[in-house]
Length: 158
Image 1 (cartoon, one colour):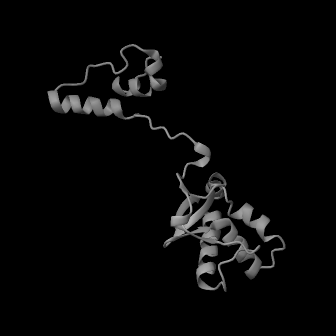
Image 2 (image 1 turned 120 degrees about the vertical axis):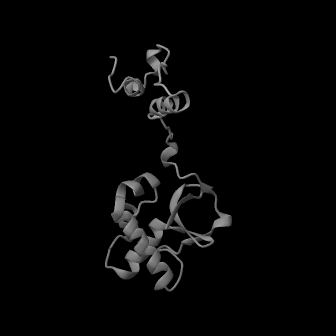
Image 3 (image 1 turned 30 degrees about the horizontal axis):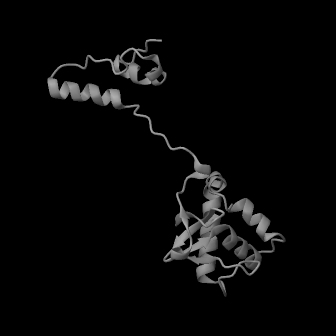
Protein backbone atom coordinates (compact mmCIF):
# COMPACT_ATOMS: atom_id res chain seq x y z
CA UNK A 1 0.00 0.00 0.00
CA UNK A 2 1.42 3.36 -1.03
CA UNK A 3 0.15 6.08 1.30
CA UNK A 4 -0.45 9.52 -0.21
CA UNK A 5 -1.79 12.86 0.98
CA UNK A 6 -4.14 14.40 -1.56
CA UNK A 7 -6.70 17.08 -2.30
CA UNK A 8 -7.41 20.52 -0.87
CA UNK A 9 -8.07 19.11 2.62
CA UNK A 10 -4.91 16.98 2.58
CA UNK A 11 -6.70 13.71 3.22
CA UNK A 12 -4.84 10.44 3.55
CA UNK A 13 -5.28 8.02 0.71
CA UNK A 14 -3.66 5.08 -1.02
CA UNK A 15 -2.33 4.98 -4.53
CA UNK A 16 -3.94 2.09 -6.37
CA UNK A 17 -2.89 1.88 -10.00
CA UNK A 18 -3.76 5.23 -11.58
CA UNK A 19 -6.23 6.08 -8.80
CA UNK A 20 -6.12 7.52 -5.31
CA UNK A 21 -8.47 5.93 -2.76
CA UNK A 22 -9.73 7.92 0.21
CA UNK A 23 -8.81 5.47 2.99
CA UNK A 24 -11.06 6.78 5.75
CA UNK A 25 -14.15 6.87 3.58
CA UNK A 26 -13.34 3.48 2.04
CA UNK A 27 -13.19 2.05 5.56
CA UNK A 28 -16.51 3.75 6.36
CA UNK A 29 -17.99 2.02 3.30
CA UNK A 30 -16.65 -1.32 4.55
CA UNK A 31 -18.14 -0.73 8.02
CA UNK A 32 -21.51 0.31 6.61
CA UNK A 33 -21.84 -2.62 4.22
CA UNK A 34 -20.16 -5.46 6.09
CA UNK A 35 -20.73 -4.76 9.81
CA UNK A 36 -23.48 -3.55 12.08
CA UNK A 37 -21.63 -0.35 13.00
CA UNK A 38 -24.30 2.34 13.66
CA UNK A 39 -21.93 5.27 12.90
CA UNK A 40 -19.56 4.13 10.16
CA UNK A 41 -18.19 7.58 9.28
CA UNK A 42 -17.35 8.44 12.88
CA UNK A 43 -15.83 5.02 13.55
CA UNK A 44 -13.80 5.18 10.35
CA UNK A 45 -12.43 8.57 11.37
CA UNK A 46 -11.18 7.00 14.61
CA UNK A 47 -9.77 3.75 13.19
CA UNK A 48 -8.49 5.00 9.80
CA UNK A 49 -8.19 8.78 10.20
CA UNK A 50 -8.05 11.06 7.20
CA UNK A 51 -5.16 12.96 8.82
CA UNK A 52 -1.67 11.53 8.22
CA UNK A 53 -0.40 12.14 11.76
CA UNK A 54 -3.36 10.37 13.31
CA UNK A 55 -3.05 7.51 10.80
CA UNK A 56 0.60 7.03 11.78
CA UNK A 57 -0.35 7.16 15.47
CA UNK A 58 -2.96 4.47 14.76
CA UNK A 59 -0.12 2.07 14.00
CA UNK A 60 -0.69 -1.45 12.70
CA UNK A 61 -4.40 -1.39 13.56
CA UNK A 62 -4.99 1.58 11.27
CA UNK A 63 -2.94 0.09 8.44
CA UNK A 64 -4.64 -3.30 8.75
CA UNK A 65 -8.07 -1.66 8.68
CA UNK A 66 -7.07 0.43 5.65
CA UNK A 67 -5.89 -2.70 3.84
CA UNK A 68 -9.13 -4.45 4.76
CA UNK A 69 -11.08 -1.54 3.26
CA UNK A 70 -9.03 -1.67 0.06
CA UNK A 71 -9.49 -5.42 -0.24
CA UNK A 72 -13.23 -5.02 0.20
CA UNK A 73 -13.49 -2.07 -2.19
CA UNK A 74 -11.66 -3.83 -5.02
CA UNK A 75 -12.87 -7.35 -4.30
CA UNK A 76 -16.45 -7.45 -3.06
CA UNK A 77 -17.98 -3.96 -3.20
CA UNK A 78 -20.74 -3.39 -5.73
CA UNK A 79 -19.64 0.18 -6.49
CA UNK A 80 -16.98 2.78 -5.70
CA UNK A 81 -19.21 5.18 -3.81
CA UNK A 82 -18.85 6.05 -0.14
CA UNK A 83 -21.51 5.92 2.58
CA UNK A 84 -22.95 9.28 1.51
CA UNK A 85 -22.64 8.62 -2.22
CA UNK A 86 -19.29 10.41 -2.54
CA UNK A 87 -16.55 9.16 -4.85
CA UNK A 88 -13.91 7.03 -3.17
CA UNK A 89 -11.65 6.74 -6.21
CA UNK A 90 -10.02 9.78 -7.75
CA UNK A 91 -7.80 9.74 -10.79
CA UNK A 92 -4.28 10.51 -9.61
CA UNK A 93 -3.87 12.93 -12.51
CA UNK A 94 -6.94 14.88 -11.34
CA UNK A 95 -6.00 15.40 -7.68
CA UNK A 96 -3.16 17.33 -6.15
CA UNK A 97 -0.73 15.13 -4.29
CA UNK A 98 1.06 16.72 -1.35
CA UNK A 99 4.34 15.86 0.31
CA UNK A 100 3.71 13.24 3.00
CA UNK A 101 4.82 15.61 5.72
CA UNK A 102 2.59 15.64 8.80
CA UNK A 103 1.39 19.16 9.61
CA UNK A 104 4.29 20.72 7.71
CA UNK A 105 6.70 19.15 10.17
CA UNK A 106 10.31 20.06 9.70
CA UNK A 107 12.61 17.25 8.75
CA UNK A 108 16.08 17.70 10.17
CA UNK A 109 19.05 15.40 10.04
CA UNK A 110 22.00 15.76 12.35
CA UNK A 111 25.45 14.64 11.36
CA UNK A 112 25.93 12.77 14.62
CA UNK A 113 28.47 10.45 13.11
CA UNK A 114 30.43 13.07 11.17
CA UNK A 115 33.23 13.30 13.75
CA UNK A 116 33.69 9.54 13.64
CA UNK A 117 33.80 9.71 9.86
CA UNK A 118 36.34 12.58 9.89
CA UNK A 119 38.53 10.73 12.36
CA UNK A 120 38.41 7.53 10.32
CA UNK A 121 39.21 9.39 7.11
CA UNK A 122 42.14 11.18 8.77
CA UNK A 123 43.59 7.87 9.86
CA UNK A 124 43.02 6.38 6.44
CA UNK A 125 44.36 9.34 4.43
CA UNK A 126 47.26 10.49 6.62
CA UNK A 127 48.04 7.36 8.55
CA UNK A 128 47.77 9.13 11.89
CA UNK A 129 44.93 9.93 14.35
CA UNK A 130 42.60 12.87 13.87
CA UNK A 131 43.81 15.88 15.87
CA UNK A 132 41.38 18.59 14.81
CA UNK A 133 38.59 20.28 16.74
CA UNK A 134 35.41 20.22 14.69
CA UNK A 135 33.89 23.03 16.78
CA UNK A 136 36.74 25.54 16.87
CA UNK A 137 35.81 26.28 20.48
CA UNK A 138 32.28 27.47 19.67
CA UNK A 139 29.97 26.02 22.39
CA UNK A 140 26.86 26.65 20.26
CA UNK A 141 28.07 24.12 17.72
CA UNK A 142 28.73 21.30 20.17
CA UNK A 143 25.38 19.60 19.52
CA UNK A 144 24.99 18.62 23.16
CA UNK A 145 28.56 17.36 23.30
CA UNK A 146 27.80 14.28 21.24
CA UNK A 147 30.19 14.95 18.39
CA UNK A 148 32.95 16.28 20.60
CA UNK A 149 32.65 13.28 22.89
CA UNK A 150 33.15 11.01 19.92
CA UNK A 151 36.24 12.86 18.72
CA UNK A 152 37.74 12.76 22.23
CA UNK A 153 37.52 8.99 22.66
CA UNK A 154 34.03 9.25 24.10
CA UNK A 155 35.10 11.64 26.88
CA UNK A 156 32.84 14.67 27.10
CA UNK A 157 34.21 18.14 27.99
CA UNK A 158 31.30 19.64 29.91
